[in-house]
Amino acid sequence: MKPLFVLLTVFLISNLVIRQYKGDMDYHLAGKIALAATLLFTSLGHLIYTKGMVLMLPDFIPLKKEMIYMTGLLEVMGAFGLFIPSLSRLKGMLLIVFFILILPTNIYASMRHLNYETATFDGKGPGYLWFRIPFQLLLIGWTYYFALR
Image: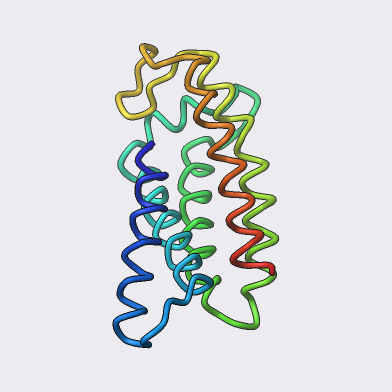
């Protein structure tokens, strides 16, 4: 829920600030800024909640802790890459692939009732997927609209 709040809040604030300086709104730029802010926000979770995020990964995945740090770094690179014109389209495509690839870990964690923030198994469970899957689809659509169009 927090990443959705970041996405929408930063989008609104960015539009207001852009309007103040440019005299007109720039939804495209505000959309990229909001996506980048959301990626930077979620990448912090990889550092703060490493132990819980490691538990999101199935047993067959090696180097779990390293994988968590690497995906956090990929989110940071994706956030900055959105603003490099020669990389923006490629980063948009890679982010969509990334969002698709991480969805199974969220499903796996939900089925196990994992609370990644506390690294315990008292989380919301499969009910969380009623939010997570639509949010993942929103991120994919948002990325397509603001980074690939």
